[in-house]
Length: 199
Image (cartoon, rainbow, N blue to C red; front, side, top):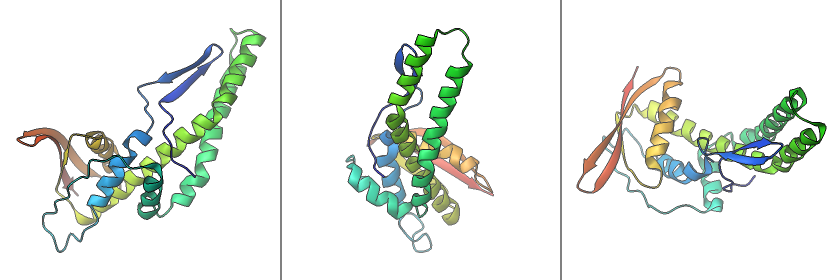
């Protein structure tokens, strides 16, 4: 398994490949997510309020991978599932090409070749997404277990985006954790503040 930036989700056609900027590569957020996971490495019974100062440095892929193994116990299952998911995406695209009725045979072959050419890209995109999701699940577990009431992060290096994605993960837990995300302006700059309500 490796972590590497590939870019947004590709859209493949007989004309070539375009990229969906509304579906970014989660690799972009993984460093911030791993640093946020590290912020929860404390004993909530001993500390009522815990302050963690982000390093503000983008991690290298090797460092991210090492931390990923630390925070995601089931990373081997994530790795095993990634190829199946990439194959599923590619097979779904190939099926759509087969069902297309308004394309020539030459166009159909070009489309299929473009899909096959993007397989490794899809594989890395899905791997990055699965790794990011695994870290978010770990953070959500820590929040729920410690019944954390508030998280405040500086709005730089994607911490705000990670909190935003964390809202959905928390809401889909059983039992769910309700959260409210606001922006707070302070002398030190802008902060994302997540207020949490536990059932």
